[in-house]
Amino acid sequence: MKKKKNLQITTASGNRRDFSEEKVAASLRRSGAGEQIIDQIISIIKEELHEGITTKEVYRRAFNLLRKKDRLVASRYKLKKAIYELGPTGYPFEHFVAAILRHSGYLVEVSEVLQGECVTHEVDVIAEKDGKKILIECKFHGDQGRFCNVKVPLYIHSRFEDIRNHQLKRETKIAPFDEGWVVTNTRFTADALVYGKCAGLKLVSWDTPKGESLKERIDHLGLYPITVSTILSKREKQFLLSREVVLCRDLLKEDFLLDQLEISAHRKKKILNEMHVLCKH
Image (cartoon, rainbow, N blue to C red; front, side):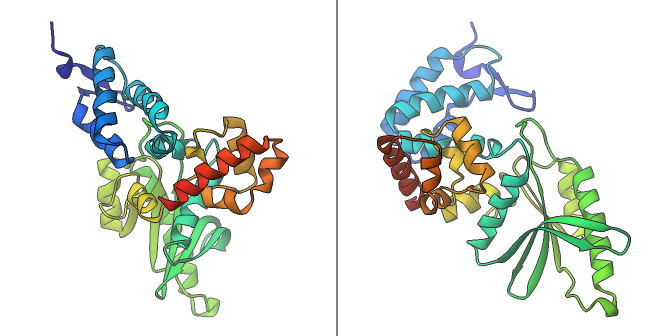
């Protein structure tokens, strides 16, 4: 019989690879789990492995086990999944990206309509810092196995050039954009990354570029979306997102919305305590 450590698991994109307990341990460690808890969780997961199990199932099992040990650490562990829960539309994701930039010292505007040389364009985010003006398009996907292919930066680059060409005309007297960015909650294909580098577009995904990836920016700033909560229900999260409450710190400022959801005083206290601790992290 094949040893469990060599079992093949199925990734979100449908590929197969060897199960790695080191990767599971690393993800738990990044969320703040202690070594004893990590060892306990991995020991249980290894006993439950079977050929072809999906990474999603492994993650779900690890999350459920971690939640029983420490709900707050479990909230941080589910960060990647929480970003996907910002859907089904891309609107909350745009506001989330804008919040990350705003807390990084940028002046930010969301959902602006700009004139191009040929047509008008609705731009997701405009950011300015240190005299540099940036056009940012956000590409949200609810499917973890879906990558942004080369068509995305091709399309965004053409829009960037159309707007910039119009701005460069003397009569417009509008400061032209200096950079174009594409930000996604998934990943880019190899061709997309090559085109972005060649065209001068900055491509930001869940794990690239190193040091400036979406995950690293979130961890550095402690800007967790409300969807990381292990206490709020799906319905409650959608209600808050519809009111543009995207960050945990947003809910601390607008906690009256929990009263509109008719949440009990005891449960409200637990939710706000969770939000406080996550913001401190």
